Image (cartoon, rainbow, N blue to C red; front, side, top):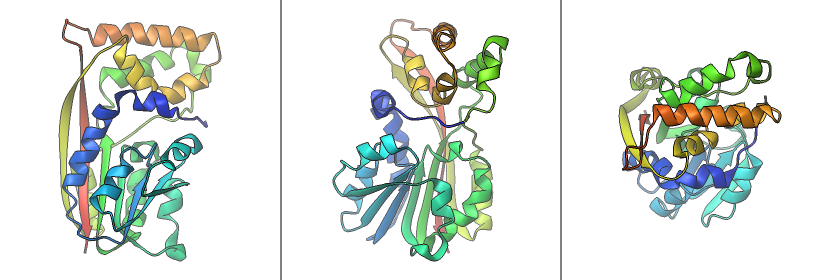
Length: 258
């Protein structure tokens, strides 16, 4: 079921969302790459860091959302186009291999993306780098509450088949990338984001993981769902006077192609 993205909503917690990208980027030891690709570039606010890190490179950002790409096209030093990760993986010889390919918090939206990793590695030049980061918090209340609520009778008829994020642990990505002939560094980090404002966890998830579910619901069901989701999230993530703590596990892998 198709859904759209809201760049402004997504950027509400841009600093917190950007920290994993900075950590991922710090582990890529490429020097002087000619071509750099960001798969799932979103608004391009983080793709900008690739252009700053390698100012001599041709930096290309790809995203399936026209709304996101429109924003990314405003970023200096970045060329942005509408395309899916699958499009890039299967582009074959239509474009030469890239020296660095990065995908940050995007692969979780690609069904069966483990099977796509060999094709993505094939799009990397020998000696080049492939780096990924995906959320690893699918079993946290921020996700389980949404899933349980969406399965209730009032909503289930509308939410069946909506896009939901799925990812794997670091060791799984390490093994798959090793089988592709890469040297791999894989790890996990849990961030403790301290969020402030009204219903901050609802604001966070409604810009990412919960967005397809919300868009699948017609009014007035959507408003009822959002209100109940917010209530349950407030119980799961209480503000004890110092902001709301959102634990967020992230999974990373950086691979150098042999």
